[in-house]
Image (cartoon, rainbow, N blue to C red; front, side):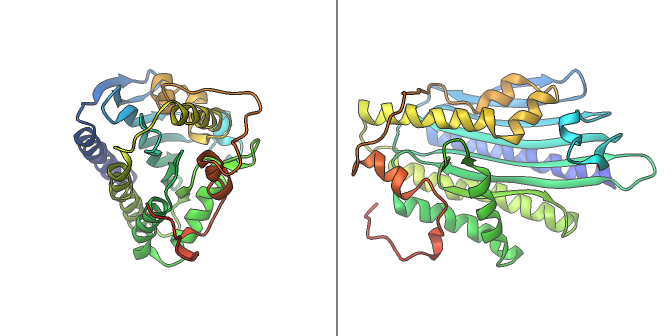
Amino acid sequence: MAHAHLDDVKTYLLDLQDRLCEALAAEDGGDFREDAWEREEGGGGRSRVIERGRLFEKGGVNFSHVFGERLPPSATAARPELVGRSFHAVGVSWVLHPENPHVPTSHGNVRFFIAEKPGEAPVWWFGGGYDLTPYYPVHEDVLHWHRVARDACAPFGEAVYPRYKAWCDDYFTLKHRGETRGVGGLFFDDLNEEGFETSFAFQRAVGDSFLDAYLPIVRRRRDTPWGERERDFQLYRRGRYVEFNLVWDRGTLFGLQSGGRTESILMSMPPLASWVYDWHPEPGSPEARLYDDYLRPRDWLGEAPSEETP
């Protein structure tokens, strides 16, 4: 039964990768190039990357299925029940870095993990989510993003969106900076308490809703004029993206520590980023507005409507 579940999830994820790449390539006008790879310890994947496109300066949609006879100590330290178990980890992850600073960066992933030991029940869970990282945010875009996330969660209970929205805010916080990476979205992990079918259905709801959340924002902002000032700020904020991925992101750390494919793991990095010593935005500027109004947890859908015109 365990491997039948794994096969069902893998079939869905491969199809999701295809659908994401098809829609994103159509939006860009370019093509993803595929790099199929194998992992010596077990498993492999297919990485698809688009670079220097009309819309995306860099984007990637990766599928991976890795397995092995034992997990690294970093993975079992907090989970002693996984010691001595073989494992499979399968997932799709994506990150999109548009060239236009007015189009937000976005990231998402959906994944499934199962660990087995003869004579014992398998240990398994789902995880994933998506988040939005704008540089020049528009309030209506953020509302749209969170409405789609809320609607994806709605069939599974009223408490689901608030729970996973709050988890996303907490997870994507740069603790050394005291700010969130962006405006959040959804984050869930260790999902198994509702049983396999319901948990798998929720994973599909999240994966299937991403394009509805992201593409309308892309279409609204992709033709907004920009210049050197906006580009410089975008590269500066991309530096925060790098900091989070290398210091705090559990997926990046697990991948590197478990012998994953480095090129695929670090695909999420922006093509260019910058760091400026002790820089602060000018008070009242569009750049300051990001810090003042957006880089903190907010109840976006429970607040009074904004008077801002998108």
